Image 1 (cartoon, rainbow, N blue to C red):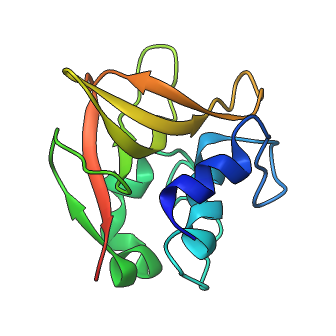
Image 2 (tube, rainbow, N blue to C red; image 1 turned 60 degrees about the vertical axis):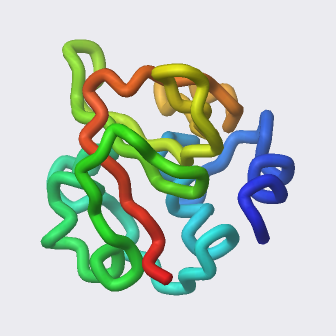
Length: 138
């Protein structure tokens, strides 16, 4: 499945890949692993806090992610990259989304809000607080 097909399949629908805590941003990444990235292995949850930021910060503790993705500290993601943001004052878990394009200094992403739980959608996000990306190894 390509990126456009993945977005079209899940746009507007809640994704709860692990059936824990309802639809969250990490569930979009976990669903993308088998369907978009072709990865059949699954680690379950993020390493330390259970937050999206751990995908980047605890990368070295996550053997499946290390096997299939390269961690890159960048503010210039490309379509298909998994973009990861650090925690904020209002969200201690951080955030993760799939890059689908650029819009000026912002990123067009496919994401899901774990607080609103209103389904996956295309959105425009700032690069502020962005840690970097996980890029699928070829």
